[in-house]
Length: 140
Image 1 (tube, one colour):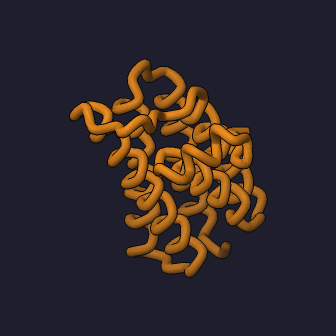
Image 2 (cartoon, rainbow, N blue to C red):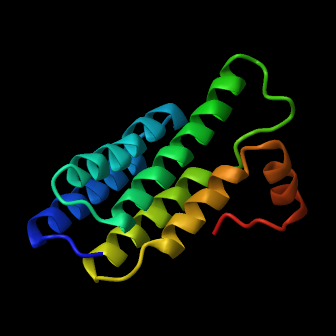
Image 3 (tube, one colour):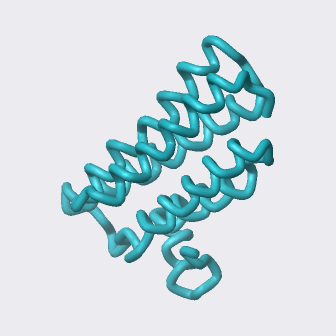
């Protein structure tokens, strides 16, 4: 992804800040709150330096946020329907964010990190949680 060095640094610095905050947060809602800064920063940069891959990062991270937020909200309202958030999901999400920041810093494609994020979010859906329980979807 071609971004100016300043925008690339701004984005990767923001992702690394998010990772640190997520690691120090004790509640999933707080971890998710910090995660939302990734797509917010991507959108800010898009407004100055558009790149299709950056738009893809924005779309995927916003989708992941929405899926996780939906599951957390359902659990809080007592409507989990037997679907919980797998243990270690947020640890794995932090790892995927680290991969994303490293890939951007090293001029590599972001696809593998984004694919991991989508798979993690999918485990919070009915079929995805079932696939996780069967061992078809691994968190790491």
